[in-house]
Image (cartoon, rainbow, N blue to C red; front, side, top):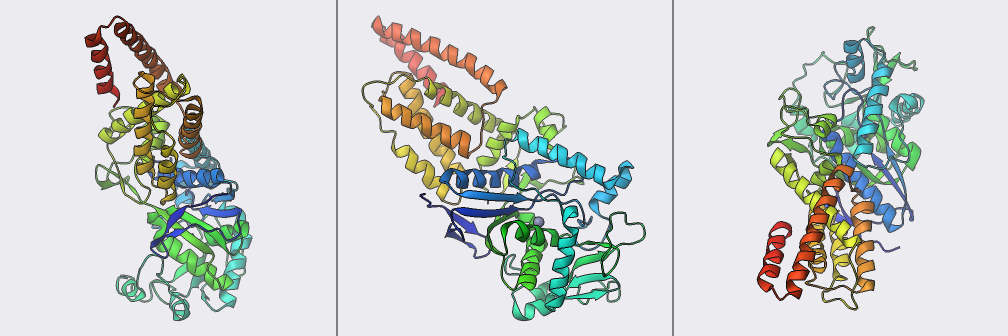
Length: 475
Ligand code: ZN
């Protein structure tokens, strides 16, 4: 098993060679959605980023256990320790059971993820299914002296933890700054310090999602589920923890602190974060009115959209940017992706139908190293895609008869493109795109036949004209 993968570790802030703790096994945990609304572009990016990594690790020969959670309890409206539970709030609004909200939006998330051709994770645990384990971890943290109970709630003691650990090492936040930045007034909260965070919250009388515990009828803090479910299914020390950049602080910083406080050791070897999607340069949010759900993307039914964009166009669009760069959505950018995606699919069809000659007039074997070097360089998909199009030029030159390819080289090239484009990048040929492309292929075939005839009749002007016009179109 050859592995030259390097990945950027957010914790060390540099690219590191990927060396799993216990090869050939790889444990990978990714923070999944809080299921209280339709999935949107912001859900698509982490799902596709870590699907690519999952696919590539498996392709390389690793046995990967990919755990992605469903948050169905404890995530409060303001992302911290105050406000209503996001799911309970939506349930109240729709006058249904909280678990109906959870089921509805879990189903629609799964549907959208399947449309985007992301592979399902190996395990998909729900926070509400792990209340006992979460209470156990709270007890461990209290026992180790890093948490305290006040009025039925339990808080993580960040100041105490910081005496012997570096709280802020992932996000680069400094404790003094966190203290100064707080606007909470003394006496408004049970917390010793405003930067402490809840491990267990006592439920207010109107709070519906509650469980009994030794401290109170209540519910776990949002960060706790990921510390608990990652280590439950991947062991106290595992390889990769991923998620969106928006989760780096406080969610992941708190996860690191909880796991260390409970187990005495850091749980994660490589932290990976995908950057965010902006819309015409702005952060996507409901309040800004620039919020686009995936269903709307696929149907085109949103006033911001000039047309519908199929799941594979969205996937290709996301892969065209490196996962650590911001990605700006615009109709123009999506339309360019649509063209690129279709060009690639047409080229692969052409490739699969090419006729071999006795020998190759061009060198194609070098493409493989270029493709995999790009992937191994922290999953550099934009560079990979640029190299894919270098190969597309070759495919079209062979198809037009300007170059030749041997039988062995052709088989090599066909396997390479099918492996990289479909198996690793996870693209697929969508029927709609396929139908148009088939017609297009037939037209091209016809033009090439006319060109061959013109050449045979020594009508070089016509033959060159056809070649040049085709080049305009495809290169
Ligand atoms: Zn999480």
